[in-house]
Image 1: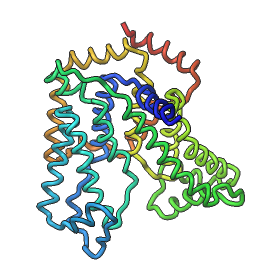
Image 2: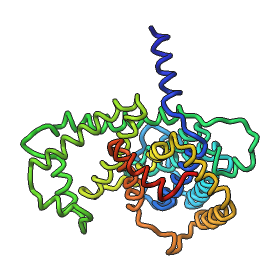
Image 3: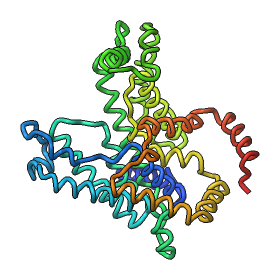
Image 4: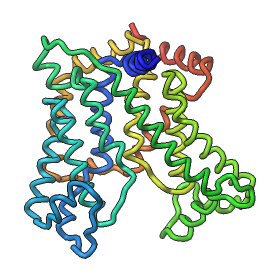
Length: 361
């Protein structure tokens, strides 16, 4: 029986996702561009933190102790930017992915040791996990330099990531379930909406609109939908088709959180990219081939663009053309995700329209 369970787990890990090098390479580039739009973290600020707030949890920062040297953190930020550029262009992609993720973990460990906490663990560990997919096999310097290297795209890291996402949402939903979100006499979502409205300098998007609704029935629908999504997401990870719909719902959920409560999870939605790209390109080899041919024919143009970006990133100089609203990431990722939750017949209609506008052949 143990062997049977082990075989099922192994089959689930290895057979659920079958990405191509192109899908993975495109995920890598879009992830880096999204990170660039949001802005790489500046750990130099740690040198200005007051030591009285240094209270590290069990981990690296507790073992090493406080690091207050401005030179150290300046050098650390420089190495982080160089590694990020290496990941973007796909040079030594596996090593760059792991190092970039570890550097982020180290830096955020110190920031968290001073009491500042962000909900960004998934985009931090994401490049480490994706390193084992061999996502440098296409659209990268590695793919040009090592054309004869016999590596294959791996799908098991996507399965592992889906489990982590499911578990993360489940652990977010369980305290809500225990903490009274089912109570029909009040709404926790309304509390978040009102707190954001009255505690912020200016509400954004639909926050004020939902404050003015003042309807407990509508607020409870939002409560129950949040619970259903966060607790149910974990149970979709065993079927790729169902999980892709769950990713579409997750993207809409985070967009809704931004619009109503004005809480942006801009970096978090970047980890949805491999699944969104899988949805659009799976079983469409002609479409993938068309895009690959486009990148190949315009190789010099893209190399020039990436070279300019590399200089901008490493120099840590962001002129006006390279400054984007951080929230734009959520819109750019979540809007295409709408098609992931539409009925198949609707998607087939849009596919036919797309073929007329952009023939695959």
